[in-house]
Length: 290
Image 1 (cartoon, rainbow, N blue to C red):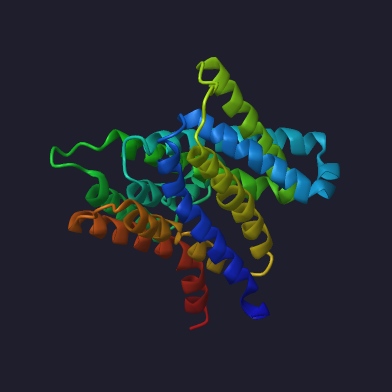
Image 2: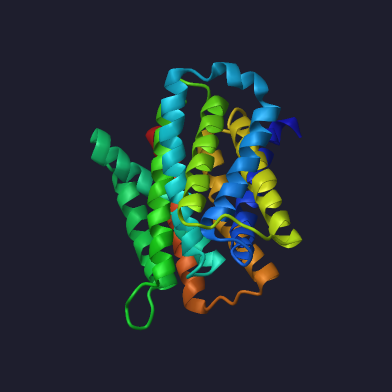
């Protein structure tokens, strides 16, 4: 069991994140976008601060500004993702969000001029075709919610990219705590500016926020951070990418969402593109030994 500890923790993270798409969709029946985000991030921030209170000592000026950058990016990404759920289905939102894996190399090329190899080009091309099958309507236009979901994938790609850059010099959990508090502040300010301060609430609405905060945010990120210490990067990325599959599964089981044949083809193509983009380092290493 110890041998598969990392993989198991990564799988827990993927399941939690997958269920989060349904949780957010249900949460929007009780809260506005920013109310939902404010409650989720505030509770998750408090939980992480309580569990990892020793990490608070590691919050330096560098951690504050780097964590704040990550927090702004996370806020924007989650806002786009949650708003997208108001116009599209959780399963489509999940798969379109997952293409952030393919966008990261593009960001690396634009910012650091890192060459994009043929494997990444192929993966990107397959993903675009998959998006077409999944999202394009008969009029050859894309649903507004799907468009927001694609934009959120870009946001999460920046989050992944800069997190990988910043954790090389700073403590990962300390950065995460600052990131969550930054997202909390921005969400609360948005609620106030938009005049959305809640005066009433339902027990189901509160329960959804508690679930999202504890399981889909705090537990998921802790499992991810600890699991990455044991599982190799390629395995981690592949397992985490299954969040889109779990998101679809929960959407069908809980929300009774119907998937058309064309949508299923799009989902399969996008998932294949994600896997292809991640396993290519292993493929190339094996090839070099021949």
